[in-house]
Length: 590
Image (cartoon, rainbow, N blue to C red; front, side, top):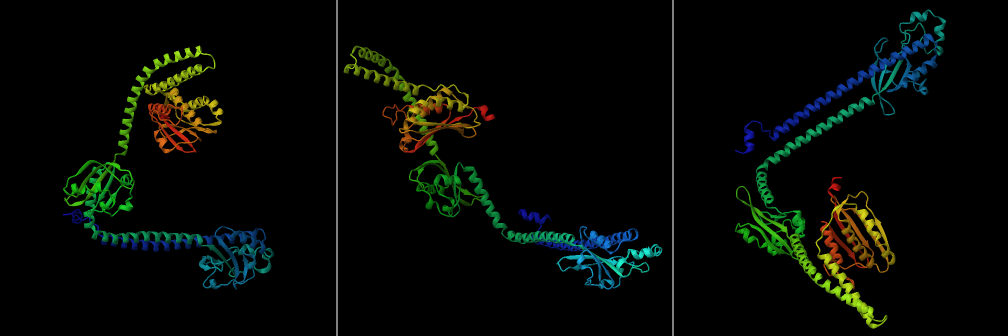
């Protein structure tokens, strides 16, 4: 019994139709609640605004009554009170009309004396009734919540007015205010209130309801989509099993690059490491067979795979997009699922180029070590006879007359002995083990100190020196004296390369998280690519009087610092040497 069947029989299985039904019920509930909520909001709005309008009418009547009783107001004062009251927030207008609809007072003075457009509000309205309300569409396009009732500022004050006689007539000029013997039925007051805040809130509720309904609709669509997925469940389950077996096998056997095919032998997986090794892109090889994109050496592994024999770490050289053969270590195996069915083949590639390069480097160092040992022995054997030859040549030079050919020959002999002695000294320097005295050192101080030694040579060759010191550099682990020796060698080479003057730039910077970088750049004649490849080899030189050991010594000293030195050069444009030296542990902690 499958897992889904177990869940179904346990009573907790929720089918697609159950999801659709639940969504439909939720939609109905949300719709009913939304309608009820909108009606409740409208009732709440009507109650609040009607109470507010009634309170405004009562307060206006009280203000008018007080002014007319105590301060003998006329119609101008009532009009001013009405205008001030209408300035309160949420009030659109205040109007007082007579029973025929003539406007006696209005928050807009220009409307006084005009006819009020709709006097149907009098129907059924009696003095003493509570204020009524209605919704009115204004000419400006806005809606007004209009509260209205009879305007009676002298309600319950008839006895007080009757006792004052002529004074009551003075308080009511022009005849529009109520006389003392009138009940107050002739005047109607209307208050227009702004309903926009309430309607905005209602619209917001409607929008929220629509959003919730949309979400539920999407859930319903998800239910229908789940029905479609259920129909493909069995096929998807088998594909997931194959994919799981494929992934487990690939991860287990993957050292670097991975190329895998499906049942039909078409390439289905081609990871980034395989792209880097082969120079091919996955988009270009997807769906193609091994024979269409891979060299014949790799395709020949199919014979082993057909016999179900895995290939492990087989070394071979293959030619991909480039011309040069690429050394590879290849592993290959078949992929089978849990049922033992064939799924595809997998090739695992490892680039041996770096390994071969390290092997070449080891052989080079062994050769240099042997050469150094031989050179040290020869140098010691040659230096003693050279001292004797120089002494005899100096003796004979002093015996000959100044300006004679014999004296000149003896001087040449002394010079050649000095040159040989210098070559032997450099040879001993190259052969001597690098005994460094490492300590945390400020690179900028070493650069500033070393530049001073070549300033005179630079001025002689019309070369300007620009020193650019990086800020905030950590101290580097170096032997200041031996590092200065490397810098001086590079400075002098750069100055000699600028026959017609130029610019020597010495720059320090942060070379990364664990090293400091120094760049020596000149604007001299530069070097070709062939010369750059041999420049650090012993006894290779492009100078007529050079020994070919200067840059070899520089390379050896930098390697002894566990650093690196690289060269970039363009003929007739200049050369740049970049040195990287590790920083001290204290510098890393900072």
